[in-house]
Image (cartoon, rainbow, N blue to C red; front, side, top):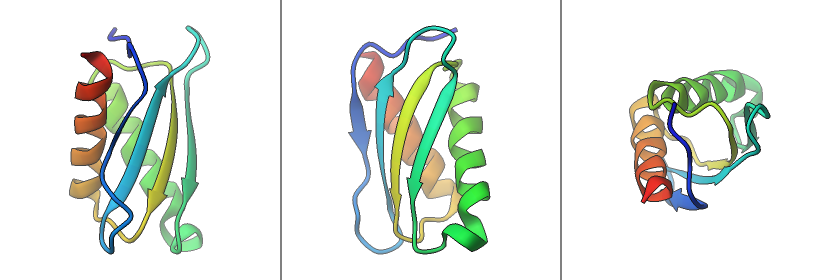
Length: 90
């Protein structure tokens, strides 16, 4: 299990990107995702699932995520989460 040491962010609010803001949560709180997206009804659950699965693949079990999506594809979301995690662990 990996712990986040501090808040971090990655990405932008440019078209086809996503801004991921990641912060540590109390142990046992789990992963909470707050998402803002113009495609919320169509893709909201998929975006949240990609974020959660990406965090879990790094061993993150407790985090607060604020995501502002502007039409990012799954691989972009994964890359932004990875970068935010790297920044939050150092």
